[in-house]
Image (tube, rainbow over all chains, first blue to last red; front, side):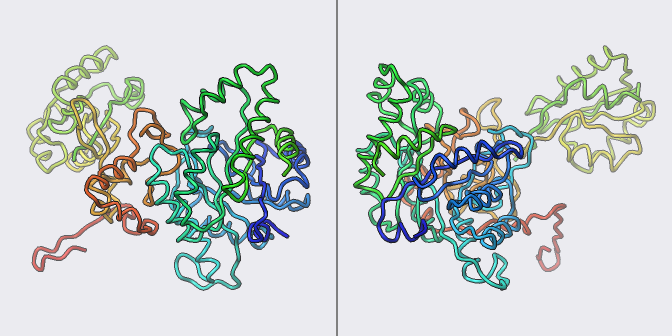
Length: 288
Length: 221
């Protein structure tokens, strides 16, 4: 069964992500992927994450496929106009990639090429719509395609956004446009996440809770202050503060969070940001 | 709407003028005065800085608005000083520079960078309000432009990047979509956010924009 089929069958899925290298040496990326082989249902490949130029997500997905793993192609609207995005969607499908996560993308000035021209011709909603139009056999200009793709279209939502109402309205729009699954921004407060899930119960699309592994209390405080849509409760920060082994405590908290959210969502998306060994530790300890 | 400008660095101006020793200065009494980049005080200040660089200022004038046809008259009234100069340094927006260039054969240099079309929200604080997209969306966005106010120009609601009402690009910039959400909520018009918006038609704003108004039958092309 592939990722789409597992979600359709009601299996609790696990995904994670790998970041392509800045350069052409993919050995670290391969090591990261090997650590989660057989433990995850799909692996996201990030698209110039944080607006930092790297090897592309499409190439990363093809490599994952060659290594025998199922990729999720992350696509942002930051760097390509609608012609390039449609073309890359067709290319991805022709190369056997069906899972696509449609994102708006971070702004250019957040990354390492702040002088670059920001594109944002489409946004996350219209990118989803675009993938759907291609599936329907025509492009955004209404021109007929010779052979149409079939995608499994994902999108992102932020359950801890300052204002939930516009988030939920946007989530509804994404579903109307064609989103078939959601990955969320990091979740640390299972109770609040359960509240969010009950608010979106009418949206009948599987949701994978985002799990970002804590490295330290300082990281948690930093995210609370700076990162949009992330809220680490004080009790977890205190736990990290007191723990002698921060890595083990971070894994333990992630495992606990997964156990707490498991009943209210359809899977988890684990982001360890360069520490994929911990992804595999979490999956083992969580019994997924 | 005003042209919001900032003065180029003196080093950049010096580089532009490297082959010229005599300069005529033009300031602008409208937008550049408001921005404190090309009014009377700034023109005087520039004359002083150019003198320090060893340039001769043959004359100067602050026109009410550099971006209109009265430039022709101003050039005529200052013929002698302009003739003496190697070039004209214009302390006005790019539109003013281009308008003035229509009426003189002297090289015309911009002393300012034109940043955006905006307005003064409070004294000394200027904000971009319009990007001339050619298909105004203000009817359904509560009178707040997401194309000018959101760095990504998003049409389908906020991205995941706002924190405490501020934009991911700058902690001092309000998230335009938070402002739009607040206003529409107060107006009881949140249903406006529930409609999916198609991608922008960039064909509506192909550069250079041109528009012909036909007075006889009141049509625009």
